[in-house]
Length: 296
Length: 268
Image (tube, rainbow over all chains, first blue to last red; front, top):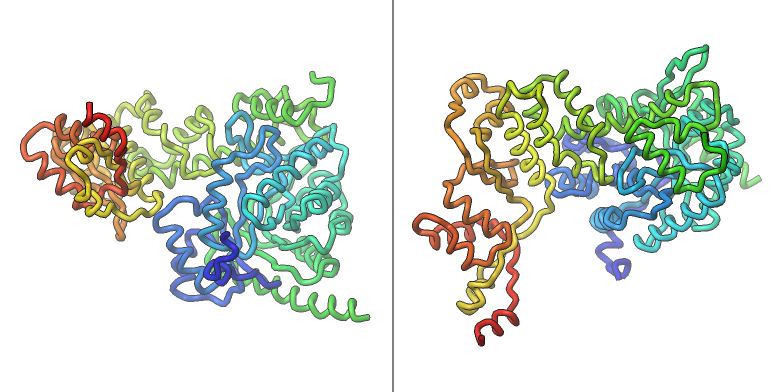
């Protein structure tokens, strides 16, 4: 029984409702050397599945900082079922790191044993909802812990979808007891790409289920005929519209652990810390506001 | 055209044909027309996937990349990615077939040792990502009878790999990664084949040339041959001394000894 193990329990450090940073390889050494004032770090589960120096860095870093695990590879929406060997690898990383939070995506990647792409969109149907819920149950049972499921950025939709994505996500949380990782940038990107109302999306999510928020930059691409499409490339600062949406989200959800993600052309740590400070200032303000509105 | 609503499995199979074979027609009839071409929308996913795979290859094969240049490497890795789907969500596992692909690539024929450098880099990559395992406690060998010892299989540590190459790729690999043009110019391509042992150490990957008989004995043991068979097959002298040295080097993590079968065979 791993949760009866006192050592393991002590090693697991909760993620507080503060601003954290996505930890990428180029920042391993700077973080160890300078011990920056960052509340917590999140890493990609799939980057820490092997042995060697990479997980050793993280073992060192997690002595000083709470760490969260964010996966892209479980393919929760695969009709063919979960890849048991990948789930076992995720389980090993979770056992090793004892992360404060574990998250995955509302998406799929695997068909016919081939890993086609990260974060492919699902049709929003009752059948897909059953499949995702079954797999979230399976993952939570295997890991013996609650996971968070994140809304992805999407670039296409299917004609036979019958459930709005925000309702789909709320159903998954309700049926499985999982939490929601609310990626505010992804909501903004998908809402822009599909003509949704981003605030309606946030209104539909159950506040009690929100376990984490993600913020990142995205790019805008000319799609011809006067159209643009927003691409979730995590390669720039958070845009003003997404900061505004974040303030709106915190008013509704209260303070939530918030992560700054940056994966393309990863900048120096100072830039990420600057983004995290902006998020922290909004979190601090929202905390006061949320407390007042709930005391009233 | 698809007229019915697909099941999730049907849709995902159609998406598989789209992603792997470019057959966008199979899935586009089920996509909402949002005013931008379906091919362009599907292309976002295809390009992202292709970039992820190309980046994985860049990290795994840094010496190959420097040998052929950025542009060639980018083209070769995109072509490889288009032909070789990922089989695992674990990206570090992607690229095992890249050396063989380079060996078949006509445009790479002007660098005859390229595929061999890639083979070495893949093994380096494997040891770098291998789980850390403690070496075998040699006292366990001492506790075995002669008959048990003869039948015992040694299990190699994943931090150790063997590779044999037709070119002196250890010297090439080192010279390229260290940017040592003089060392590169001094390499005699005829100084081959090379019998290499790749090991992860605290300071990084260590690539060492072994003598042929030393390598063959180790290779036989790594491939699971029982001790006595591996020793019998090993050519040259002092094979027992070689074995002792290899055991002392900590190349093995475990000992697999089926005591029951040994007991039965010794009775017969």
